[in-house]
Length: 120
Picture 1 (tube, rainbow, N blue to C red):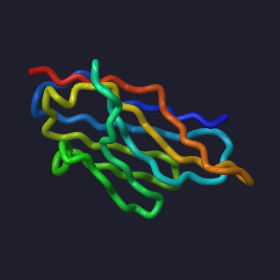
Picture 2 (cartoon, one colour):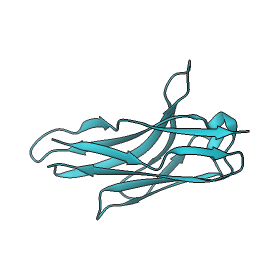
Picture 3 (cartoon, one colour):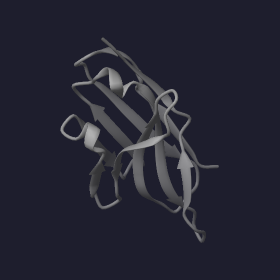
Picture 4 (tube, rainbow, N blue to C red):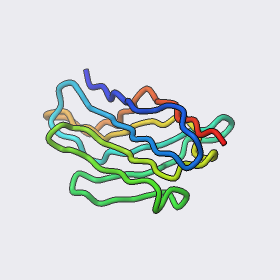
């Protein structure tokens, strides 16, 4: 069974930094795109950043210049370095990955979510 396990959330003051990690586990053939989404109370889930297997990056305008997404393909892990955090970054952050099982079609997986709270 494929799982995405996140870590690194917490409480931080305005202007501070946090680094999120998400590791895939289980049996599969390969992992395509990996990314981070977030959902604040009362809001829809939104894209934060995505990185393709080849390293192409995409960021939401609201985090450009402050957040950096990266991945370690050897460890099937994606990271999100968050700097200069603002109160509006407060949300539950979800890891997402397109994972292809051997002989099967790609399936979209989600992590359980990790809370990030930025206090002013």
